[in-house]
Length: 143
Image 1 (cartoon, rainbow, N blue to C red):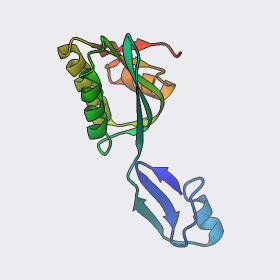
Image 2 (cartoon, helix red, strand yellow):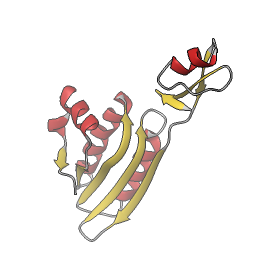
Image 3 (cartoon, rainbow, N blue to C red):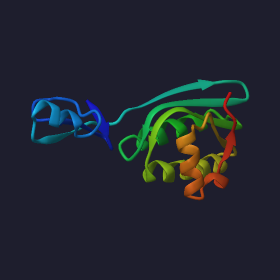
């Protein structure tokens, strides 16, 4: 099934919509249904001598930010001077996700650490630029 904004899109017979609406017309289907899907965010933490790397893969949104916050707060307890958020496999980030990144940056500062975004893809880089948040983060080039 194709996902649009956290939903899978299919016709009444279960045909996937690629591109949106095209398959419905071809298969003679009339109705479209949206089935809720809980977006996934895979989080992997790696502690190195000078920094902690938190690798993210998937969607950062209202459904996944609580796990991200808990992971980052737990990682900060290890006392690393730098926390890297590897954004290379992030596929989606909504306003809740952006707000959470800002809060996590402040949380890291209070913990005497720095939050660094790395491997920021074109879509997220553009999102940070358009929202005026790009200057709020330290962004490291892709590794």
